[in-house]
Length: 314
Image (cartoon, rainbow, N blue to C red; front, top):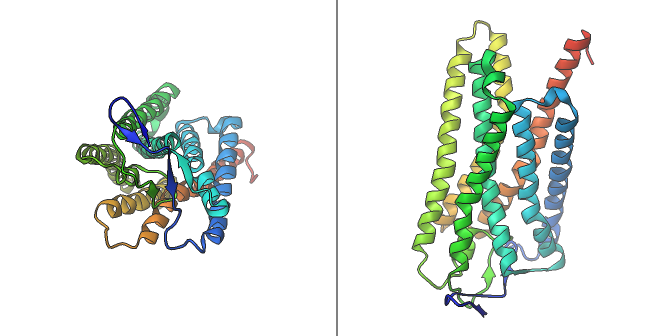
């Protein structure tokens, strides 16, 4: 154990177990996770390249999508390489500061992803409810400020996690029954009163996710009201189609996140293997799904643009 001048102490490293209960199967379980990680990398990098090189996609929806793809790359890369090292090479040890860095990236960029989904909902609201003013309201400057605000919120809200944990005394137990370091799992190894940390964790979670979910919900209520007032069924279907991909991504992010959050605090009877599998999928499924869902949508937009320019099918 290392002891600092403020009487806090921490171990040199922690031990990540991986998936308790599946120790004998982890080698094979790693293959689908590796495949999903490769899909996430290739899909998001491809999406970023297409958005960067295609001028027809330099509009708010796709600028937010580029930010989302970057966030997904950070989220998946912050956990998957170490997880695969655990499963394939039995590299269970993680250095103390590396654990805190991983904790920071996971929670900060989860907050950023939630904020970007909120910003994309606002973009859909403006595009459908105020189509004639969309480009004047969501200018590149406004999009940049929204992205920067979401990023700063994630960094500022999560930084106290690491600061408070780093100043606390840890028990001799170094084992984290997880595949990666996250706030609640690390907090369980602290030999001190953690009520302030837990209270702040709840505050941060509800203030970020709660605010984003409220804004998303209000945006879609207003969108629904506007769409139902459109004169033709074709126009209504077209408007709903522009939101379908975003709704799929929202559900893929928030449902596993909510399950993971609730089982951490109240799901004491949920099997640990189920909890950990959902925690892994929470950080892996959105980075895999987002480029697939939006890649299809992007191709449809580009095909329409080409068809409009040349008057024929591409």
